[in-house]
Image 1 (tube, rainbow, N blue to C red):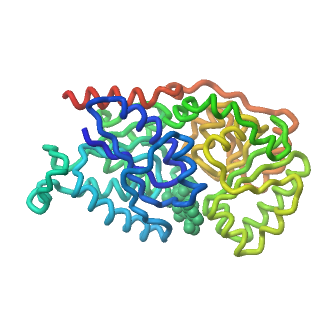
Image 2: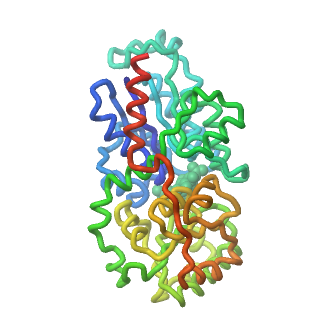
Image 3: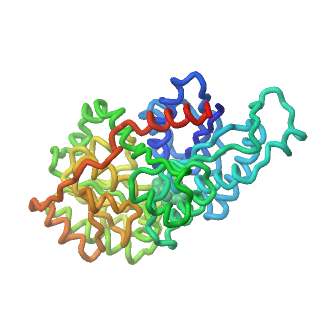
Amino acid sequence: MLIHLICAARPNFMKIAPLYHALKKESWANPLIIHTGQHYDLNMSDAFFVDLGLPNPDINLGIGSGTHAEQTGKVMIAYEKVLMEQRPDLIIVVGDVNSTVACTLAASKISYKTINTINSSDTTNTTNRERPLVAHLESGLRSFDRSMPEEVNRLATDVLADILWTPSHDADENLIKEGVSPDKIQRVGNIMIDSLEMLREKIEKQDVYGDFGLEAKGYGLVTLHRPSNVDDPEALRRLCKILVQIAKQIPLVFPIHPRTRKNLEQNQLLQIVENNKRLFLPDPLSYIRFMNMMFNCRFVITDSGGIQEETTYLGIPCLTLRPNTERPITISQGTNQLCEVKDLEEKAEAIISGRIPQANKIEYWDGKTADRIVEYLRKFGQD
Ligand code: UD1
């Protein structure tokens, strides 16, 4: 089974790594890594390949940045050529970035039958399929907020994908409500927890907070990159000022995403947060270094999707600066709270003074999601 594992941006790499390693052990599977190049910096991409033990991508489409339509369109055009050449049996897309929907669209519309007449190279896969099956890993998550580009990507991907692998029961319910046939849905669990468990020993061995002169549980960790928080200069200015206030109570480490750095620089806002001995602004950290910072922090302030899940799994308080979340289970079962900017200082203070939510264990967030997927595919291949 020739399988394309599609990755594009930082949050994708820890989702494909456990699956790549698990599939590589199977004689019937030939997994290839296709990187669309949506993220291309050393800090946003290469460092993750090293930490997660992934080889260089088999193919890099080198798409880079652009508007949503440019990025999506360029990935579709470039990936269609790869599909025509390689004819995979299955493509696995993860998460909700522009490349997820772009590759799903390209694979859903291609016809190998037409290609047979154009391309008869010996090196292509000799599949009997008319087109590759598309499996979406992390399917069914919904914020119900279509102003988020990721929500549009999730909806479109789930409508088209043939196999829908969900992380939790709420995701199954969302799909059923949208009229998806239950036999397409399989709850496999949270793949990011596989990466965390796979690298736990290496993560625990590090002392990254020590590099900043900090002590375990003696700092807060901040990540912000959503357009809704960082693209409006006034909103970003306000947020920076609040972070400075919170840093008076507890040091903060804020690894700055390239989008956020660009906006801080362009709007002369960097000076509000820099040169503050209690506010650290490193470049984005590699997976192992970042997770070491998360394992040992008092709390997290974020607008990321994945971090809401990782903090719930680890029992670390998380303040999510968004009006909604596609991961409500992290609120009902975990340590996550949605937070408006105006309430951030107060909610951070409550956590610093010891008011900490407790997390429950969530079914299938156990480090064995990749094994469940491999088992599913093995049986699927035999049918
Ligand atoms: C993308 C995803 C988002 C994900 C996030 C994680 C979409 C719609 N968004 O958002 O779901 O949570 O990645 O980081 O797919 N840039 C660099 N170097 C890089 C990558 C990006 O400088 O390696 C710059 C780009 O030039 C661009 C900005 O960062 O100006 C944003 O990059 P982009 O991939 O468009 O979106 P993200 O905000 O990273």
